[in-house]
Length: 492
Image (tube, rainbow, N blue to C red; front, side):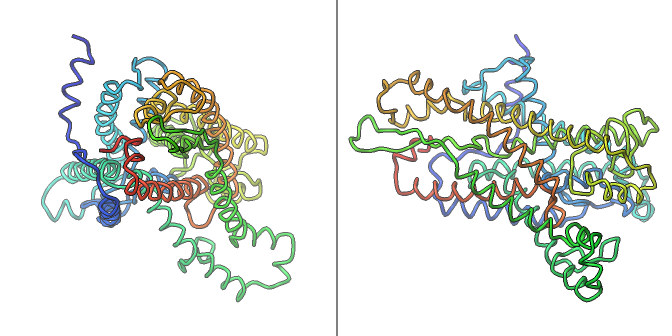
C-alpha cells in the first residue's frame, strides 16, 4: 500500500462543505455570498479573548492582501490557505509529488491534501507568534481567573485555530454555493474598508497630518503656507505626504486593470448539433487572474516571518528587524516594496531615522527594488502556470469542457485532441505573458503607493477581483437564461 492509498481515506473524512446536488439559482448564490461577507465582517470585529494590548502584529505590512484583522478571530486571514497552496504547488511543480492535475481523482486528492495542509499551516503560523511573544496573553485576565499564562496562551491558540478553520469553510461556501471565491471576497472586503478609511479618516499620523486624503488636504490648506507648497521641498511634500501621488496611482491602476482585464483572444466555437448556435471562448491577457500575486507576496511574508523570529532570538545573520521592518541583511532585499518610502532615497533615510538605524546606500536601494521586481515577475509567471493547472484552466481540462458542452472549433475535427491542440497554442503563452505583465503592474503599483494602507498589490487585487466578480455575475445571469451555457460549466 502506497502513502497515497493511506492518506486518501483520511483526506476524504476531513470536514467539508457539501456541494449542491443541483443548480443553485442566481438569487440564492447572491444571498449566500452576501451572508458570508456579513459573517466575515462580524468575525473581523470579534477580539481574541485574553490577548494583551502589548501584542505585536507580525503581518501588519501584509494585512491588505491577507484579509485578516489584527487582534481578531480572523487574525491569520487567508494566510494559511495561500501558504498551503504555495507548498503543494511547489511540491507538484518540482515533481516531488507526482500528480496529473487534469485527472479528476488527482484533483480530488490535491484538494484534500491542501485542506489538511491549511489546518497544519494555521498551527505553524499561530504557534511561532504565541511562543515567540508576539501574541501575548493578558496577565490581568490570568490573575482574575486564577490560572497561569500558559492556559490563556492555549485559549488564544484555540481561538486562532477556530478562526482559521472558519475562513477556510467560508471560502468553501462561497466557491460552492456563492459567486466567485471566498478568498477574493475577503480581500475585496478588507481592502475596500482600508481605502474608505484612507479617504475620510481624521485621525492624525505620527507627523500630525490626518490619515485620510480629504482631511489631509483641508489641514494643509489651513496650516501650510503657499510659499512652501510651491517650493521643491513643498512639491515633494504634496506628492508623497499630501497623497497626490497615491491618488494618481490609485486612479491609473484602476483604469489599467479594467483595460487589461478586457484584453483577450477570442476562439470561435460552434455547436455540433444545433445549427447556427455559435459562441466564443475568451482567453484573457490575465488568464490566471491576479490571485497568483497573493502567492508571491505570501511567500515573501513567510520568509520575513522566519527572519523576524530568528532576529528576536538574537540570530541576526539574515538581518535585523524593527518590529516587522527589516533593517539590513538579506531580509532587507527580500522584503516587498510597499510605497515610495521604500525606494526614494530621501524618504528611505527619513524612515530609517525613525528606527534609529543606518539608512541603506543608493546601490542597496536599487538592489532591493531589483530583487522585488524579479520575485514579482518570475514568481508571477511560475505561480500563474501552477494556478491554471491546479484550477482546471489548462489546455486539456478546457478542451474537455468545450467538448462536453457539445461545442467545437469550426474547421477542426470534433474531438478533444483537436480542441486541445488549439488551446495549447494560446493558453500557456498567454499565461506566461499575463503572469509577467501582472508582476510588472504590481511592482509599479507598489512603488507609487495607494490611498489608505491598502498597498499597490492590495489595490491591484481588489480592482481585478471586483471586475471578475462582475463578469461572474453576468455569466450567472446568462446561465439562468440558457441551459446550454450551464452545461458548458458543468452545472446540472
